[in-house]
Length: 348
Image (cartoon, rainbow, N blue to C red; front, side, top):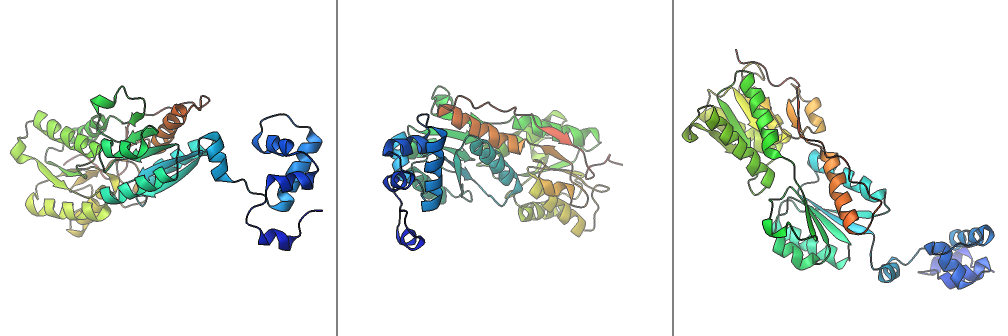
């Protein structure tokens, strides 16, 4: 006879022995059905599954981890889940993991090394099989202290020559200078020569690369280093707004702005409009990332599209393949591309 509802509610864990008794089969049969380790007749399999449902059996995940030596979980560390860029990247990673029956533990480090290290410790204690870190705030050596020899994927990280032959660490980087060059060329071909740059946080590899391309491009068109107009932002709307206010006060002759991400680009447009100038009639603005809000701001922001979702998919696929999931196929990782909207026009 099976347990009553009252008895089940008083128990913390139903055992497979109780499942076997309820189903009228052996312990081995229950194990084979639950773990899919051997073929079991349809009649016995159905009896086991009905008993599982009736008794409310939940597998002991800790025991399964010890037996299989993996937890089927991957850690994902992000700088700022509130930024739509990282939310879309995380979705790509989760969808790829879910399609292969892995779970993703998402952590938000706020670009804070101490907070990131606390999460590294927590994820290591949870025995995740691997970790994906976007814009690592700590050193690689610190990361390896917690995760050697587990699999590590770094997204948007400076290339480390000493790690190229290390199969434990894999990297996902786009050609940031190419994307920045597309943005600068578009402003240039629309007649803009007095171009300012709102740079991102320079501890980020992508921010440094976009800034380098801005500087090199301006030098190629004959602008000296002393004439460059650069203000650092914080990758936020407010950061772009404040940086643009400073630019307008110090360099009112600017006619074009290249912002290192879309949030700063939208903040810059608001600052321009608040100053009584118009976008794009007086000052043109181009962003970077192509997050969804760029289609709904006024004017709609011209930007460089990054394959955010695909980056998350690709990073997760690298981690899963390194864990022996041979059926995983690496997705296509498109190049950055120009998305023309309304915030750039030819200089009059």
